[in-house]
Amino acid sequence: MKNNSGVEDNAPLTRAAKVADDDFKFAQSYDGRRFYVGTRPVIRWIKGDGLDDEITRAAIGQATRLFGNEVDYCLCTQGIDASRVRKVLEWATQPVEWWPVSENDNPELARLLMDAGCPPENFGYWWKWFPERVRPDAPEWILDGDMVITGKPDWYQQWLDGKDVVRLSQDDAENPHIYGKYAGLVNLEMMLYSGLASLPPKCRYMPMIAQVLTQQPLAAGHNGKRDMDEQGIIVAAFEKLNPVPIPLYEFPFCRAFQDFIDYGQNGNIGKVWGYHFGWSFRMKNPHFERLISDEIVFSLLHSSLKDKFRWLGNFGQWGIPGWSMTDDATEIILKYASSFAGKNVLELGTSRGRLTAMLATLGCKVTTVDHHDRGAADNLAGLGVTVVVDDSIHFINTSTQFFDLVVYDMHGNSPHDWERYSKPLMRLVKRGSTLIINNYLLNKIPEWHEETGVEWFLKQLPRRWSIKLYDSINPGIAVITNDFRIEINKKFRLLKERFSGVFEKLNHFLRSLRIDFIRRYLQTKKNTRAIKRSGFFNESYYLQNNPDVKASGINPAQHYLLYGGFEGRNPSEKFDSAFYLEQNPDVKNSGMNPLVHFIILGENENQNYVL
Image (cartoon, rainbow, N blue to C red; front, top):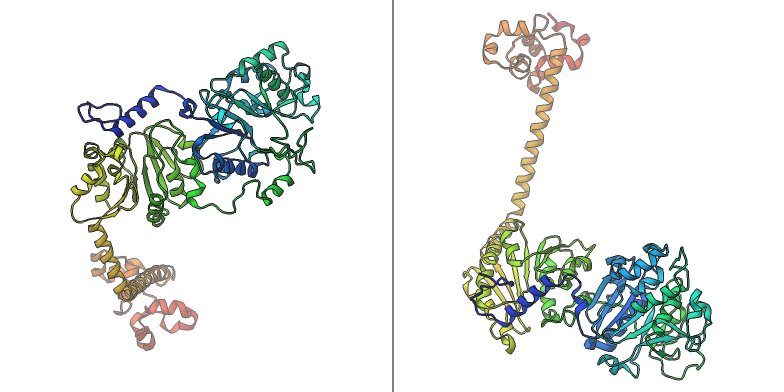
Protein backbone atom coordinates (compact mmCIF):
# COMPACT_ATOMS: atom_id res chain seq x y z
CA MET A 1 0.00 0.00 0.00
CA LYS A 2 1.28 3.46 -0.93
CA ASN A 3 1.04 6.77 0.89
CA ASN A 4 0.15 10.05 -0.81
CA SER A 5 3.62 10.57 -2.29
CA GLY A 6 3.53 7.15 -3.95
CA VAL A 7 5.89 5.50 -1.48
CA GLU A 8 5.02 2.11 0.01
CA ASP A 9 3.71 2.52 3.58
CA ASN A 10 6.20 -0.03 4.90
CA ALA A 11 9.11 1.66 3.10
CA PRO A 12 11.54 3.79 5.13
CA LEU A 13 10.23 7.37 5.06
CA THR A 14 13.18 9.55 4.07
CA ARG A 15 13.21 13.28 4.60
CA ALA A 16 12.54 13.89 0.90
CA ALA A 17 9.66 11.41 0.91
CA LYS A 18 8.14 13.16 3.92
CA VAL A 19 8.48 16.55 2.22
CA ALA A 20 6.83 15.17 -0.92
CA ASP A 21 4.07 13.55 1.13
CA ASP A 22 3.38 16.74 3.09
CA ASP A 23 3.37 18.69 -0.14
CA PHE A 24 0.83 16.32 -1.68
CA LYS A 25 -1.42 16.42 1.39
CA PHE A 26 -1.38 20.20 1.41
CA ALA A 27 -2.23 20.34 -2.30
CA GLN A 28 -5.19 18.05 -1.68
CA SER A 29 -6.46 19.87 1.39
CA TYR A 30 -6.14 23.48 0.18
CA ASP A 31 -8.14 24.60 -2.83
CA GLY A 32 -6.52 27.91 -3.70
CA ARG A 33 -3.22 29.67 -4.20
CA ARG A 34 -0.46 28.21 -2.14
CA PHE A 35 1.20 31.62 -1.98
CA TYR A 36 -1.81 32.90 -0.03
CA VAL A 37 -1.06 30.79 3.06
CA GLY A 38 2.58 31.82 3.54
CA THR A 39 3.83 33.85 6.50
CA ARG A 40 6.89 35.57 5.01
CA PRO A 41 6.60 39.36 4.44
CA VAL A 42 5.42 40.22 0.92
CA ILE A 43 5.60 43.24 -1.39
CA ARG A 44 2.83 43.42 -3.95
CA TRP A 45 2.23 45.61 -7.01
CA ILE A 46 -0.87 46.02 -9.18
CA LYS A 47 -0.39 46.41 -12.95
CA GLY A 48 -3.07 47.13 -15.52
CA ASP A 49 -3.14 47.71 -19.26
CA GLY A 50 -1.26 51.02 -19.18
CA LEU A 51 1.94 52.40 -20.69
CA ASP A 52 3.99 51.92 -17.50
CA ASP A 53 5.33 48.39 -18.08
CA GLU A 54 8.94 49.60 -18.00
CA ILE A 55 8.36 51.30 -14.64
CA THR A 56 6.90 48.16 -13.07
CA ARG A 57 9.83 46.16 -14.53
CA ALA A 58 12.30 48.58 -12.91
CA ALA A 59 10.34 48.59 -9.63
CA ILE A 60 10.44 44.81 -9.26
CA GLY A 61 14.02 44.57 -10.52
CA GLN A 62 15.14 47.17 -7.95
CA ALA A 63 13.13 45.76 -5.04
CA THR A 64 14.38 42.20 -5.53
CA ARG A 65 17.94 43.50 -5.45
CA LEU A 66 17.31 45.75 -2.46
CA PHE A 67 15.44 43.29 -0.21
CA GLY A 68 16.72 39.98 -1.63
CA ASN A 69 15.12 36.93 -0.03
CA GLU A 70 14.12 38.76 3.17
CA VAL A 71 10.66 39.12 1.61
CA ASP A 72 8.52 37.52 -1.07
CA TYR A 73 7.14 39.34 -4.11
CA CYS A 74 3.83 39.33 -5.95
CA LEU A 75 2.64 41.01 -9.14
CA CYS A 76 -1.13 41.31 -9.47
CA THR A 77 -2.30 42.12 -12.98
CA GLN A 78 -5.54 42.83 -14.75
CA GLY A 79 -6.01 42.82 -18.48
CA ILE A 80 -2.49 41.86 -19.62
CA ASP A 81 -1.31 38.50 -20.97
CA ALA A 82 1.47 36.13 -19.91
CA SER A 83 3.90 37.25 -22.62
CA ARG A 84 3.72 40.83 -21.38
CA VAL A 85 4.02 39.76 -17.74
CA ARG A 86 7.16 37.74 -18.49
CA LYS A 87 8.69 40.86 -20.03
CA VAL A 88 7.78 42.94 -16.94
CA LEU A 89 9.34 40.36 -14.61
CA GLU A 90 12.54 39.59 -16.51
CA TRP A 91 14.71 41.85 -14.29
CA ALA A 92 13.67 40.18 -11.03
CA THR A 93 16.42 38.35 -9.13
CA GLN A 94 14.01 36.62 -6.74
CA PRO A 95 10.90 34.47 -7.23
CA VAL A 96 7.78 36.51 -8.00
CA GLU A 97 4.22 35.21 -7.77
CA TRP A 98 2.15 36.30 -10.77
CA TRP A 99 -1.51 36.69 -9.77
CA PRO A 100 -3.89 37.63 -12.63
CA VAL A 101 -6.86 39.03 -10.71
CA SER A 102 -10.58 38.82 -11.37
CA GLU A 103 -13.74 39.79 -9.49
CA ASN A 104 -13.60 36.38 -7.78
CA ASP A 105 -10.48 37.43 -5.84
CA ASN A 106 -12.50 39.87 -3.70
CA PRO A 107 -16.15 38.85 -4.06
CA GLU A 108 -17.30 41.22 -1.29
CA LEU A 109 -15.89 44.29 -3.03
CA ALA A 110 -17.06 43.04 -6.42
CA ARG A 111 -20.62 42.74 -5.10
CA LEU A 112 -20.55 46.29 -3.67
CA LEU A 113 -19.38 47.69 -6.98
CA MET A 114 -21.81 45.71 -9.13
CA ASP A 115 -24.70 46.69 -6.81
CA ALA A 116 -23.90 50.28 -7.79
CA GLY A 117 -24.11 49.40 -11.47
CA CYS A 118 -20.35 49.12 -12.00
CA PRO A 119 -19.50 45.95 -14.00
CA PRO A 120 -15.99 44.39 -13.81
CA GLU A 121 -14.93 46.07 -17.05
CA ASN A 122 -15.35 49.43 -15.24
CA PHE A 123 -13.68 48.50 -11.92
CA GLY A 124 -10.63 50.53 -12.96
CA TYR A 125 -8.69 51.79 -9.88
CA TRP A 126 -10.53 49.30 -7.68
CA TRP A 127 -8.51 46.38 -9.09
CA LYS A 128 -5.73 47.36 -6.70
CA TRP A 129 -7.76 45.80 -3.87
CA PHE A 130 -8.27 42.42 -5.56
CA PRO A 131 -7.53 40.35 -3.56
CA GLU A 132 -7.90 42.13 -0.23
CA ARG A 133 -4.63 40.48 0.88
CA VAL A 134 -2.34 38.23 -1.16
CA ARG A 135 -0.98 36.86 2.13
CA PRO A 136 -3.21 37.65 5.13
CA ASP A 137 -0.95 36.12 7.80
CA ALA A 138 2.14 38.10 6.77
CA PRO A 139 3.28 41.74 6.74
CA GLU A 140 2.29 43.17 3.33
CA TRP A 141 2.96 46.27 1.24
CA ILE A 142 0.44 47.14 -1.48
CA LEU A 143 1.75 49.46 -4.22
CA ASP A 144 0.69 50.83 -7.57
CA GLY A 145 2.65 49.47 -10.52
CA ASP A 146 4.24 52.89 -11.08
CA MET A 147 5.83 53.05 -7.60
CA VAL A 148 9.56 52.31 -7.34
CA ILE A 149 11.18 51.58 -3.96
CA THR A 150 14.80 52.77 -3.83
CA GLY A 151 15.60 52.33 -0.12
CA LYS A 152 14.35 51.03 3.23
CA PRO A 153 12.24 53.22 5.54
CA ASP A 154 13.23 53.71 9.17
CA TRP A 155 10.45 51.38 10.30
CA TYR A 156 11.32 48.57 7.83
CA GLN A 157 12.58 46.11 10.47
CA GLN A 158 9.43 46.53 12.56
CA TRP A 159 7.31 45.79 9.50
CA LEU A 160 9.52 42.83 8.57
CA ASP A 161 9.05 41.40 12.08
CA GLY A 162 5.26 41.78 11.82
CA LYS A 163 5.18 44.31 14.68
CA ASP A 164 4.48 47.53 12.80
CA VAL A 165 1.27 49.59 12.60
CA VAL A 166 -0.93 50.28 9.58
CA ARG A 167 0.61 52.94 7.35
CA LEU A 168 -0.77 54.81 4.33
CA SER A 169 0.94 57.26 1.99
CA GLN A 170 0.26 60.99 2.24
CA ASP A 171 -0.20 63.81 -0.29
CA ASP A 172 -0.26 67.02 1.73
CA ALA A 173 0.18 69.18 -1.40
CA GLU A 174 -3.12 68.08 -3.00
CA ASN A 175 -6.66 69.41 -2.50
CA PRO A 176 -9.81 67.53 -1.46
CA HIS A 177 -11.01 66.92 -5.02
CA ILE A 178 -8.88 63.74 -5.07
CA TYR A 179 -11.48 62.13 -2.77
CA GLY A 180 -14.42 62.62 -5.14
CA LYS A 181 -17.84 62.56 -3.46
CA TYR A 182 -16.32 61.16 -0.27
CA ALA A 183 -14.20 64.18 0.72
CA GLY A 184 -16.65 64.85 3.56
CA LEU A 185 -15.73 61.52 5.20
CA VAL A 186 -11.97 62.12 5.07
CA ASN A 187 -9.67 63.84 7.59
CA LEU A 188 -8.39 66.71 5.44
CA GLU A 189 -5.62 67.48 7.91
CA MET A 190 -3.90 64.16 7.21
CA MET A 191 -4.49 64.19 3.42
CA LEU A 192 -3.79 60.48 2.97
CA TYR A 193 -3.93 58.73 -0.40
CA SER A 194 -3.93 55.06 -1.37
CA GLY A 195 -0.64 54.81 -3.29
CA LEU A 196 1.21 52.69 -0.72
CA ALA A 197 -0.47 50.72 2.06
CA SER A 198 1.66 48.95 4.68
CA LEU A 199 -0.22 46.31 6.66
CA PRO A 200 0.69 44.08 9.62
CA PRO A 201 -0.29 40.38 9.65
CA LYS A 202 -4.02 39.56 9.81
CA CYS A 203 -5.08 43.17 9.24
CA ARG A 204 -8.31 43.47 7.23
CA TYR A 205 -9.73 46.60 5.65
CA MET A 206 -12.74 45.26 3.72
CA PRO A 207 -15.04 45.55 6.79
CA MET A 208 -14.14 49.25 6.92
CA ILE A 209 -14.84 49.73 3.20
CA ALA A 210 -18.25 48.11 3.76
CA GLN A 211 -18.90 50.52 6.67
CA VAL A 212 -18.07 53.54 4.49
CA LEU A 213 -20.35 52.34 1.70
CA THR A 214 -23.14 51.67 4.19
CA GLN A 215 -22.79 55.23 5.47
CA GLN A 216 -22.65 56.66 1.93
CA PRO A 217 -23.43 54.18 -0.88
CA LEU A 218 -21.84 54.56 -4.28
CA ALA A 219 -23.84 56.57 -6.78
CA ALA A 220 -25.70 54.53 -9.38
CA GLY A 221 -23.64 54.02 -12.50
CA HIS A 222 -20.32 54.40 -10.66
CA ASN A 223 -17.32 54.02 -13.00
CA GLY A 224 -14.04 53.12 -11.30
CA LYS A 225 -12.05 54.14 -14.38
CA ARG A 226 -12.84 57.84 -14.06
CA ASP A 227 -14.57 58.56 -10.73
CA MET A 228 -12.32 59.73 -7.87
CA ASP A 229 -14.56 58.08 -5.28
CA GLU A 230 -12.25 55.06 -4.90
CA GLN A 231 -9.56 57.29 -3.38
CA GLY A 232 -11.96 58.82 -0.88
CA ILE A 233 -13.52 55.49 0.12
CA ILE A 234 -10.13 53.78 0.64
CA VAL A 235 -8.77 56.68 2.73
CA ALA A 236 -11.97 56.90 4.81
CA ALA A 237 -11.82 53.12 5.38
CA PHE A 238 -8.13 53.08 6.34
CA GLU A 239 -8.57 56.01 8.70
CA LYS A 240 -10.68 53.66 10.82
CA LEU A 241 -7.47 51.59 11.28
CA ASN A 242 -5.59 54.59 12.76
CA PRO A 243 -2.85 54.64 10.10
CA VAL A 244 0.47 56.42 10.42
CA PRO A 245 1.09 58.65 7.35
CA ILE A 246 3.99 57.93 5.01
CA PRO A 247 5.03 61.54 4.27
CA LEU A 248 5.20 62.76 0.69
CA TYR A 249 8.82 63.82 1.21
CA GLU A 250 9.67 60.11 1.78
CA PHE A 251 7.83 58.85 -1.30
CA PRO A 252 7.36 61.86 -3.60
CA PHE A 253 5.25 62.18 -6.74
CA CYS A 254 7.01 62.31 -10.13
CA ARG A 255 3.94 63.08 -12.26
CA ALA A 256 4.50 62.71 -15.98
CA PHE A 257 2.70 66.00 -16.76
CA GLN A 258 4.70 68.08 -14.23
CA ASP A 259 8.27 69.29 -14.70
CA PHE A 260 9.11 69.01 -11.00
CA ILE A 261 9.19 66.31 -8.31
CA ASP A 262 6.51 66.93 -5.70
CA TYR A 263 7.95 66.42 -2.19
CA GLY A 264 4.95 68.05 -0.50
CA GLN A 265 4.87 71.04 1.84
CA ASN A 266 8.14 70.13 3.59
CA GLY A 267 10.17 69.85 0.40
CA ASN A 268 13.08 67.43 -0.05
CA ILE A 269 14.67 66.82 3.33
CA GLY A 270 16.82 63.90 2.19
CA LYS A 271 14.64 61.00 3.41
CA VAL A 272 13.38 59.65 0.07
CA TRP A 273 13.08 55.86 -0.17
CA GLY A 274 10.86 55.64 -3.24
CA TYR A 275 9.16 57.48 -6.11
CA HIS A 276 5.61 57.45 -7.46
CA PHE A 277 5.68 58.02 -11.22
CA GLY A 278 2.09 59.25 -11.56
CA TRP A 279 0.30 59.31 -14.92
CA SER A 280 2.91 57.02 -16.46
CA PHE A 281 0.14 54.65 -17.47
CA ARG A 282 -1.03 57.38 -19.88
CA MET A 283 2.15 59.09 -21.10
CA LYS A 284 5.96 58.84 -21.10
CA ASN A 285 7.51 60.03 -17.83
CA PRO A 286 10.65 62.20 -18.17
CA HIS A 287 11.39 61.95 -14.43
CA PHE A 288 11.73 58.18 -14.77
CA GLU A 289 14.25 58.55 -17.60
CA ARG A 290 16.26 61.14 -15.65
CA LEU A 291 16.39 59.09 -12.43
CA ILE A 292 17.58 56.09 -14.45
CA SER A 293 20.27 58.28 -15.99
CA ASP A 294 21.26 59.43 -12.47
CA GLU A 295 21.41 55.72 -11.43
CA ILE A 296 18.84 56.30 -8.69
CA VAL A 297 16.28 54.04 -10.38
CA PHE A 298 17.41 50.62 -11.58
CA SER A 299 17.65 49.69 -15.26
CA LEU A 300 19.24 46.86 -17.20
CA LEU A 301 20.32 46.76 -20.84
CA HIS A 302 20.38 43.00 -21.28
CA SER A 303 19.11 39.89 -19.50
CA SER A 304 20.54 36.42 -20.10
CA LEU A 305 18.20 33.48 -20.60
CA LYS A 306 18.74 32.37 -16.98
CA ASP A 307 18.14 35.91 -15.68
CA LYS A 308 14.90 36.41 -17.64
CA PHE A 309 13.23 33.61 -15.72
CA ARG A 310 14.64 33.98 -12.20
CA TRP A 311 11.19 35.15 -11.16
CA LEU A 312 10.03 31.56 -11.72
CA GLY A 313 12.44 30.23 -9.10
CA ASN A 314 11.10 28.05 -6.32
CA PHE A 315 12.46 29.07 -2.93
CA GLY A 316 10.77 31.09 -0.23
CA GLN A 317 7.41 30.97 -1.93
CA TRP A 318 5.87 27.72 -0.85
CA GLY A 319 6.72 27.30 2.82
CA ILE A 320 8.44 23.89 2.38
CA PRO A 321 12.13 22.94 2.06
CA GLY A 322 13.27 23.24 -1.52
CA TRP A 323 15.40 25.28 -3.89
CA SER A 324 15.70 26.26 -7.50
CA MET A 325 18.20 24.56 -9.78
CA THR A 326 21.65 26.12 -9.49
CA ASP A 327 22.97 28.25 -12.35
CA ASP A 328 25.77 25.76 -13.05
CA ALA A 329 23.29 22.88 -13.36
CA THR A 330 20.98 25.01 -15.48
CA GLU A 331 23.80 25.91 -17.87
CA ILE A 332 24.69 22.25 -18.43
CA ILE A 333 21.08 21.29 -19.14
CA LEU A 334 20.60 24.24 -21.51
CA LYS A 335 23.82 23.32 -23.32
CA TYR A 336 22.47 19.82 -24.03
CA ALA A 337 18.95 21.10 -24.76
CA SER A 338 20.16 23.55 -27.41
CA SER A 339 20.68 20.63 -29.80
CA PHE A 340 17.05 19.51 -29.28
CA ALA A 341 15.38 22.61 -30.74
CA GLY A 342 12.25 21.57 -32.62
CA LYS A 343 12.22 18.17 -30.88
CA ASN A 344 10.05 16.70 -28.13
CA VAL A 345 11.38 17.33 -24.63
CA LEU A 346 9.87 16.04 -21.36
CA GLU A 347 10.55 17.95 -18.13
CA LEU A 348 9.52 16.21 -14.93
CA GLY A 349 9.10 18.17 -11.68
CA THR A 350 8.36 21.54 -13.28
CA SER A 351 7.14 23.36 -10.16
CA ARG A 352 6.48 26.93 -11.37
CA GLY A 353 8.09 26.43 -14.79
CA ARG A 354 11.52 28.13 -14.73
CA LEU A 355 13.49 25.44 -16.56
CA THR A 356 10.50 24.75 -18.82
CA ALA A 357 10.37 28.38 -19.92
CA MET A 358 14.06 28.34 -20.81
CA LEU A 359 13.73 25.07 -22.76
CA ALA A 360 10.75 26.48 -24.68
CA THR A 361 12.66 29.69 -25.43
CA LEU A 362 15.41 27.54 -26.98
CA GLY A 363 12.78 26.17 -29.37
CA CYS A 364 12.13 22.80 -27.71
CA LYS A 365 8.62 21.31 -27.86
CA VAL A 366 8.23 20.86 -24.11
CA THR A 367 5.81 18.75 -22.10
CA THR A 368 6.11 19.46 -18.38
CA VAL A 369 4.64 17.34 -15.60
CA ASP A 370 4.03 17.99 -11.89
CA HIS A 371 1.61 16.37 -9.46
CA HIS A 372 0.18 19.74 -8.42
CA ASP A 373 -0.63 22.92 -10.34
CA ARG A 374 1.68 25.61 -8.93
CA GLY A 375 0.80 28.19 -11.59
CA ALA A 376 2.90 26.76 -14.44
CA ALA A 377 0.01 26.83 -16.93
CA ASP A 378 -0.47 30.59 -16.39
CA ASN A 379 3.24 31.38 -16.19
CA LEU A 380 4.05 29.52 -19.43
CA ALA A 381 1.01 30.54 -21.48
CA GLY A 382 1.89 31.40 -25.06
CA LEU A 383 5.21 29.51 -25.07
CA GLY A 384 3.80 26.40 -26.75
CA VAL A 385 4.32 24.26 -23.65
CA THR A 386 2.06 21.32 -22.75
CA VAL A 387 1.45 21.44 -18.99
CA VAL A 388 0.29 18.16 -17.43
CA VAL A 389 -0.88 17.77 -13.81
CA ASP A 390 -0.12 14.12 -13.01
CA ASP A 391 2.14 11.90 -10.95
CA SER A 392 5.39 11.72 -12.90
CA ILE A 393 5.78 7.94 -12.65
CA HIS A 394 2.21 7.40 -13.76
CA PHE A 395 2.78 9.72 -16.72
CA ILE A 396 5.94 8.04 -18.04
CA ASN A 397 4.36 4.61 -17.55
CA THR A 398 1.25 5.50 -19.54
CA SER A 399 2.37 8.08 -22.12
CA THR A 400 2.61 6.81 -25.70
CA GLN A 401 4.53 9.86 -26.93
CA PHE A 402 8.24 9.66 -27.75
CA PHE A 403 10.56 12.27 -26.19
CA ASP A 404 14.03 12.95 -27.54
CA LEU A 405 15.20 14.50 -24.27
CA VAL A 406 13.97 13.84 -20.72
CA VAL A 407 14.99 16.12 -17.82
CA TYR A 408 14.30 14.56 -14.43
CA ASP A 409 14.39 16.77 -11.30
CA MET A 410 12.40 15.21 -8.47
CA HIS A 411 12.15 15.12 -4.70
CA GLY A 412 12.63 11.57 -3.50
CA ASN A 413 15.97 10.11 -4.59
CA SER A 414 16.37 7.15 -2.25
CA PRO A 415 17.15 3.68 -3.69
CA HIS A 416 13.58 2.65 -2.87
CA ASP A 417 12.24 5.60 -4.92
CA TRP A 418 14.52 4.75 -7.83
CA GLU A 419 13.36 1.16 -7.89
CA ARG A 420 10.04 2.65 -9.02
CA TYR A 421 11.59 5.17 -11.41
CA SER A 422 14.17 2.92 -13.06
CA LYS A 423 12.08 0.71 -15.37
CA PRO A 424 10.11 3.45 -17.15
CA LEU A 425 13.21 5.64 -17.43
CA MET A 426 15.34 2.77 -18.79
CA ARG A 427 12.60 2.10 -21.33
CA LEU A 428 12.78 5.71 -22.49
CA VAL A 429 16.54 5.61 -22.93
CA LYS A 430 16.31 2.28 -24.80
CA ARG A 431 14.15 4.02 -27.38
CA GLY A 432 16.97 6.49 -28.06
CA SER A 433 16.25 9.38 -25.69
CA THR A 434 18.83 11.36 -23.76
CA LEU A 435 18.09 11.41 -20.02
CA ILE A 436 19.39 14.20 -17.75
CA ILE A 437 19.03 13.70 -13.99
CA ASN A 438 19.44 16.55 -11.53
CA ASN A 439 20.31 15.88 -7.82
CA TYR A 440 22.66 13.02 -8.67
CA LEU A 441 24.86 13.94 -5.66
CA LEU A 442 22.08 15.08 -3.35
CA ASN A 443 23.27 12.68 -0.65
CA LYS A 444 26.48 14.73 -0.25
CA ILE A 445 24.39 17.39 1.52
CA PRO A 446 24.20 16.19 5.16
CA GLU A 447 20.43 16.62 5.66
CA TRP A 448 19.77 14.60 2.47
CA HIS A 449 22.25 11.80 3.20
CA GLU A 450 19.63 9.11 2.47
CA GLU A 451 19.24 10.23 -1.16
CA THR A 452 21.59 7.70 -2.81
CA GLY A 453 19.07 6.41 -5.34
CA VAL A 454 20.53 7.99 -8.46
CA GLU A 455 23.89 6.34 -7.80
CA TRP A 456 22.05 3.03 -7.35
CA PHE A 457 20.23 3.57 -10.65
CA LEU A 458 23.42 4.36 -12.58
CA LYS A 459 25.04 1.14 -11.36
CA GLN A 460 22.15 -0.89 -12.81
CA LEU A 461 22.59 0.47 -16.32
CA PRO A 462 24.00 -1.88 -19.03
CA ARG A 463 27.55 -1.12 -20.17
CA ARG A 464 26.48 -0.06 -23.63
CA TRP A 465 24.86 3.04 -22.11
CA SER A 466 26.98 6.17 -21.88
CA ILE A 467 27.00 8.05 -18.55
CA LYS A 468 28.45 11.56 -18.25
CA LEU A 469 28.70 12.80 -14.65
CA TYR A 470 29.15 16.40 -13.51
CA ASP A 471 30.39 15.92 -9.93
CA SER A 472 31.79 19.40 -9.37
CA ILE A 473 28.31 20.90 -9.59
CA ASN A 474 26.25 20.59 -6.45
CA PRO A 475 23.98 18.63 -6.24
CA GLY A 476 25.29 16.93 -9.40
CA ILE A 477 24.09 16.23 -12.94
CA ALA A 478 24.04 12.86 -14.73
CA VAL A 479 23.54 12.61 -18.50
CA ILE A 480 22.62 9.18 -19.88
CA THR A 481 22.48 8.07 -23.52
CA ASN A 482 22.24 4.72 -25.29
CA ASP A 483 25.69 3.99 -26.78
CA PHE A 484 24.29 1.25 -29.02
CA ARG A 485 22.06 3.64 -30.88
CA ILE A 486 24.72 6.34 -30.89
CA GLU A 487 27.22 3.97 -32.51
CA ILE A 488 24.72 2.90 -35.17
CA ASN A 489 23.90 6.51 -35.99
CA LYS A 490 27.58 7.45 -36.03
CA LYS A 491 28.47 4.58 -38.41
CA PHE A 492 25.57 5.44 -40.68
CA ARG A 493 26.74 9.07 -40.83
CA LEU A 494 30.31 7.97 -41.63
CA LEU A 495 29.10 5.63 -44.41
CA LYS A 496 26.94 8.38 -45.79
CA GLU A 497 29.86 10.84 -45.81
CA ARG A 498 32.29 8.29 -47.34
CA PHE A 499 29.95 7.22 -50.13
CA SER A 500 28.16 10.52 -50.58
CA GLY A 501 29.47 10.80 -54.19
CA VAL A 502 28.32 7.29 -55.05
CA PHE A 503 24.94 7.85 -53.43
CA GLU A 504 24.55 11.09 -55.36
CA LYS A 505 25.37 9.48 -58.73
CA LEU A 506 23.11 6.51 -57.99
CA ASN A 507 20.33 8.82 -57.00
CA HIS A 508 20.81 10.84 -60.19
CA PHE A 509 20.78 7.64 -62.30
CA LEU A 510 17.62 6.34 -60.66
CA ARG A 511 15.99 9.73 -61.08
CA SER A 512 16.91 9.68 -64.78
CA LEU A 513 15.46 6.19 -65.19
CA ARG A 514 12.27 7.27 -63.48
CA ILE A 515 11.95 10.38 -65.63
CA ASP A 516 12.73 8.40 -68.83
CA PHE A 517 10.18 5.73 -67.92
CA ILE A 518 7.48 8.33 -67.28
CA ARG A 519 8.31 10.12 -70.55
CA ARG A 520 8.15 6.86 -72.52
CA TYR A 521 4.89 5.88 -70.87
CA LEU A 522 3.24 9.19 -71.69
CA GLN A 523 4.56 9.15 -75.27
CA THR A 524 3.21 5.60 -75.76
CA LYS A 525 -0.24 6.68 -74.59
CA LYS A 526 -0.15 9.71 -76.88
CA ASN A 527 0.96 7.72 -79.96
CA THR A 528 -1.58 4.92 -79.30
CA ARG A 529 -4.33 7.55 -79.16
CA ALA A 530 -3.03 9.14 -82.40
CA ILE A 531 -3.07 5.76 -84.21
CA LYS A 532 -6.65 5.05 -83.13
CA ARG A 533 -7.84 8.48 -84.29
CA SER A 534 -5.89 8.51 -87.59
CA GLY A 535 -8.50 6.63 -89.66
CA PHE A 536 -5.79 4.21 -90.77
CA PHE A 537 -6.22 1.70 -87.94
CA ASN A 538 -9.01 -0.89 -87.99
CA GLU A 539 -9.05 -2.97 -84.82
CA SER A 540 -11.23 -5.78 -86.32
CA TYR A 541 -9.00 -6.00 -89.40
CA TYR A 542 -5.84 -6.10 -87.29
CA LEU A 543 -7.11 -8.86 -84.97
CA GLN A 544 -8.52 -10.91 -87.87
CA ASN A 545 -5.19 -10.86 -89.71
CA ASN A 546 -3.08 -11.31 -86.57
CA PRO A 547 -4.63 -14.11 -84.48
CA ASP A 548 -1.54 -14.20 -82.21
CA VAL A 549 -2.34 -10.65 -81.08
CA LYS A 550 -5.93 -11.63 -80.39
CA ALA A 551 -4.76 -14.62 -78.36
CA SER A 552 -2.35 -12.50 -76.30
CA GLY A 553 -5.06 -10.12 -75.11
CA ILE A 554 -2.81 -7.08 -75.66
CA ASN A 555 -4.35 -3.82 -76.80
CA PRO A 556 -4.31 -4.08 -80.66
CA ALA A 557 -3.38 -0.42 -81.29
CA GLN A 558 -0.61 -0.58 -78.67
CA HIS A 559 0.69 -3.86 -80.19
CA TYR A 560 0.84 -2.27 -83.62
CA LEU A 561 2.64 0.79 -82.15
CA LEU A 562 5.28 -1.17 -80.29
CA TYR A 563 5.73 -4.28 -82.47
CA GLY A 564 3.42 -4.75 -85.44
CA GLY A 565 4.51 -1.75 -87.45
CA PHE A 566 8.16 -2.81 -87.34
CA GLU A 567 7.22 -6.40 -88.28
CA GLY A 568 5.49 -5.25 -91.48
CA ARG A 569 1.95 -5.86 -90.23
CA ASN A 570 -0.65 -3.51 -91.66
CA PRO A 571 -3.01 -1.53 -89.37
CA SER A 572 -5.78 -1.73 -91.99
CA GLU A 573 -6.37 -2.11 -95.70
CA LYS A 574 -5.42 1.58 -96.13
CA PHE A 575 -1.73 1.55 -95.09
CA ASP A 576 1.25 -0.64 -96.07
CA SER A 577 3.74 -0.67 -93.20
CA ALA A 578 6.44 -2.74 -94.90
CA PHE A 579 6.37 -0.61 -98.05
CA TYR A 580 6.62 2.59 -95.96
CA LEU A 581 9.68 1.36 -94.10
CA GLU A 582 11.25 0.14 -97.34
CA GLN A 583 10.82 3.55 -98.94
CA ASN A 584 11.95 5.42 -95.80
CA PRO A 585 14.99 3.64 -94.35
CA ASP A 586 15.67 6.64 -92.04
CA VAL A 587 12.35 5.91 -90.32
CA LYS A 588 13.29 2.28 -89.87
CA ASN A 589 16.62 3.28 -88.37
CA SER A 590 15.02 5.89 -86.07
CA GLY A 591 12.83 3.33 -84.31
CA MET A 592 9.67 5.35 -84.96
CA ASN A 593 6.47 3.49 -85.83
CA PRO A 594 5.79 3.92 -89.61
CA LEU A 595 2.15 5.02 -89.20
CA VAL A 596 3.09 7.51 -86.45
CA HIS A 597 5.75 8.98 -88.76
CA PHE A 598 3.22 9.11 -91.57
CA ILE A 599 0.73 10.95 -89.33
CA ILE A 600 3.37 13.46 -88.23
CA LEU A 601 4.43 14.26 -91.86
CA GLY A 602 0.85 14.52 -92.97
CA GLU A 603 -1.01 12.21 -95.24
CA ASN A 604 -1.10 14.78 -98.09
CA GLU A 605 2.65 14.46 -98.50
CA ASN A 606 2.52 10.65 -98.39
CA GLN A 607 -0.25 9.68 -100.81
CA ASN A 608 1.95 6.95 -102.35
CA TYR A 609 1.83 4.87 -99.16
CA VAL A 610 -1.94 4.71 -98.89
CA LEU A 611 -3.45 1.42 -100.11
